[in-house]
Length: 410
Ligand SMILES: Nc1nc2c(c(=O)[nH]1)N[C@H]1C(S)=C(S)[C@@H](COP(=O)(O)O)O[C@H]1N2
Ligand SMILES: [Mo]
Image (cartoon, rainbow, N blue to C red; front, side, top):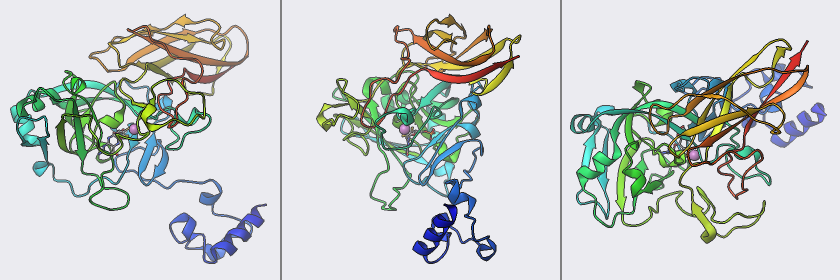
């Protein structure tokens, strides 16, 4: 089989494995005839992401997309090198933070102003907030029929301490006309095609969201510079909304008199059927609604799935729960596939949109295979579904309960 594949590959490529690997195999002549490069056999994505741990799971290297395994999200604040990356294009190069500036303008802006990072620091209140960012497509991998796009499992989420200024202070300084509807962003990453006139992504939020006290323009993440891949030197951060609204490498903010019409604001991008549809249904663009508030969700971050414990041991579990509503009101766990649920201890958040830690001590009566499921409920009374929630064409908003596998032995 492998021989055949090798022969086939050799013949079809006529040259070398280099084309598939993106690099010449220097000692190809010495590679035994019945062997394939391991990178081809195992479909390895090469990566060395600047500022990132190699424990991230790289889903794509052009553009870079990498997620955090659940057991590495156990910290209250996700370390910068473990924070997920979702790029639509190529980050800017040779950034000079001293001369970085953003322009704020738009049909519904009373003026047009330019701010350097220093002038933001000097002219506005500097605030820090612990805000959870989650990609709208987190959990996409589970949808069936499958949805195109990055096959995120659970790790396109993280919570960091962001330091910067309130977006509302800046847009109020520019002045907002009465007819303002939306606030959009532009970033200085480049389109994969290299075309400087094409935007990678240019999304936005309704004016009310932009004016929320927690909506920020940030230059620091966990008291350090924001990593290049997460938007250095300046980005927007909106908790509770799809992270696609949180523009990285921020270069311009527009106050709009209409729903912002930038790249990825239209078509099926970041939209779900306004009314539920059957899995696999074709949905017309006009029947899709823009995703705003993200649903309640949680993750078990300790132990790592696949843990083994002894029958006489108690298993401590830890996790994180987050919501776009005021707060998480309870988290429960089940070890019998959702037949019964028991309460977890739950910490409170320092500010809205920070995720909340939960924990429990679990006893298992018999040896065998178990699953631990976690289910969070928020202050609106919304709770996570056990099975996949509403199918949608692009695979957004999967907030089904997280499951981990546990074996109990004698
Ligand atoms: N300029 C710019 N901003 C961007 C993106 C991008 O590709 N370019 N990706 C968006 C998407 S889809 C997500 S989920 C978040 C990811 O933020 P992170 O990479 O810091 O985790 O950034 C958003 N902001
Ligand atoms: Mo995203």
